[in-house]
Length: 261
Image (cartoon, rainbow, N blue to C red; front, side, top):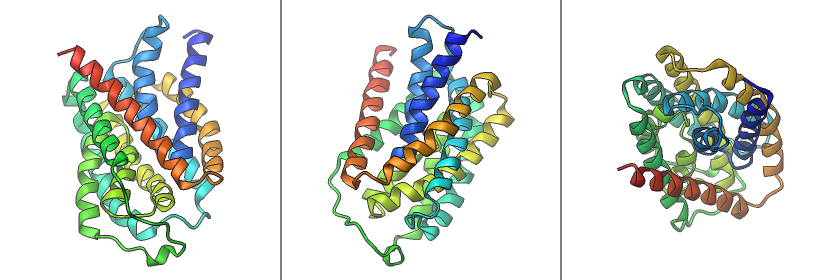
């Protein structure tokens, strides 16, 4: 692996992880398409969808861990939400992460595209939830949260995305969680999900260690920077950044799926 290839992988990991800390996602929604397309476009050997999903699974684990360390004293992490959705999503993500070994690369891409599309639609729908200064006053339907989290975990475990890019819209639209609390809490839930996903990917034997380590190193630098900057942005800006990223990815994956039919 030459230096130029290492730098490209590092840049991909840095961009994805910076965004993960900024808007409370694991970075896979950005890293998945970048790892899938950029090396090939630049004339390097590409990765399969199985390999990309495994790399992003490990990357998300470290990116969210570091972002959590930055935000742990912010007061925006809803413990009850983390417990109910986190325990459900870690089970689903393990099933999806291990079960992905039985799926083709095209199937993984289709599942990723569908997840991104659903998340994009949910993000652009109008939301009436207001910001709450007292986190203890926020309530949600625990059964609905757990039920949805299991299915998010299975689907996201398959593509190595940990599910934050759809977990946040679910929190905002269905559970009526305020934006900043949804973003901070999703980081913890995503970390738990990535643990299940990574374990499943390791057991399935799909992890490529050299590119994964490069991406992880980039994550350790970029993710905390994004998390720190997020504290200085208003919630509307954070929501629009997340909406744009999800929408752009959904369109790109959708076009590729259509052209390959």
